[in-house]
Length: 70
Image (cartoon, rainbow, N blue to C red; front, top):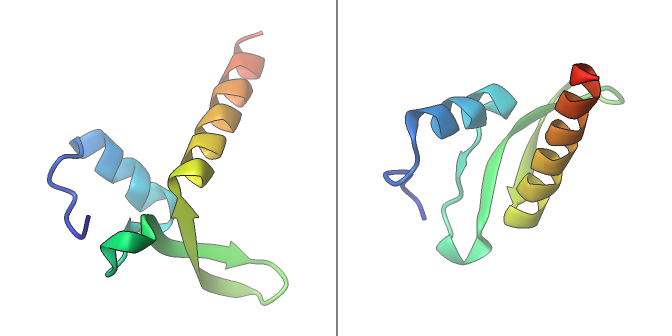
């Protein structure tokens, strides 16, 4: 999992847009790591998303898109 050879260019762009997410060093972690803004610290902090996290984000994005279309 340290390479993203099987992902489409679109998926890679989304990972970059989310916060420059990439694979973690340890395959067993099954996470992507990147950066997100922490308003309490007023800076970007390293963050990790599991497959469940990404599915939750996806569901929320679909809900928001549906809301925008109504």
